[in-house]
Length: 265
Image (cartoon, rainbow, N blue to C red):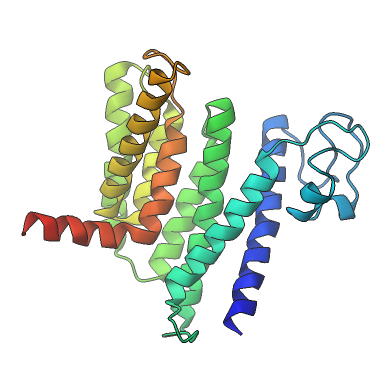
């Protein structure tokens, strides 16, 4: 039974991943979400059987049925990652144990899962958009701030804690923006900091920021060492912060407890 449910959650995530790919592309092209999907190269409409998440990419061998041009690997990767993260969020919230039974099924856990799925989708959009075009869209981050804040209020989080965390996250990046006169980071990072705080609360927002900068430093130095980037090159900070937000969403409490135990050792 549990295996069937996990497969269903994974497939559900694949569908959302396909939707995210469509949303990202249409946001970039400033197109409505109402029209049919088409090949970005030959503009032919994509039939439903060529638009099945992950499966169609495999069957078509990564090429458009009509023009035979290669389909970006972004599409299957986003679908797969979304599906996997949906499963991780589901398992994390429902605490599935070795005998394949659920523990403590409550409406709150369902709401926690919906919140996590929503935040995962937002962070994937931010990750891809910033990676490709070095931009974090306010049309994504600002509505997400309100939605995730309301989610957390319904889940019983302290509104004072959430607002303090949001202010800290926002101020951290705002101070860098002011000091550097916009050279170090962009305005989108400031709004992302607010979103991280409202989503994660205090002290998890600090954990996410530290993880994000650690990952960014590690990747950045690696790219410089291998000649892919220079010290003066622009870095898509949203890529690392969105990754860190998802990591902290799942394991933030564990990381905080580990750190506190390490200090008192």
